[in-house]
Amino acid sequence: MLVPVDIAYHRQSRQLELTYENEERFLLPAELLRVLSPSAEVQGHSPDQAQLPVGKRDVSIVGIEPVGLYALKIVFSDGHDSGYYDWDYLYKLAIEKEKLWQQYLDKLTQLGASRDPDDPKNEPFKPQLKKSCHH
Image (cartoon, rainbow, N blue to C red; front, side, top):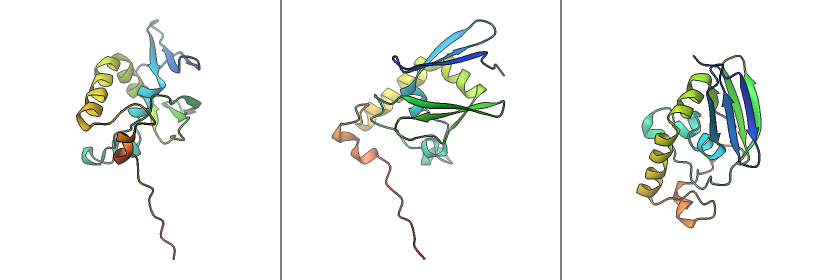
């Protein structure tokens, strides 16, 4: 397991920078981190429950909190904060960034959705509010 020795968020470019002991440096865009969140909300509890986050082009990171010695909790400007990015997952995102990003873009195209938050084509993909039951 590779653990970053330095983590910095660059607000202007909206990128998370990870630096490792071997001097490897990676930049991960906030949008990529958001759409590939390891949370159950995005990944589902099984592959058929996975959600496709759409319209996240302008998302930024508003908070980063350590989770023990094994992960980060990232809080996004759209309110999403339920994924724990463990060190292995962050490294996987870093080294497979181009491939994973292209897969996401291909999926958007395939389903007719968009990265644009104001695109009406995204409506069918937006999470539905769960109805609460009142007893």
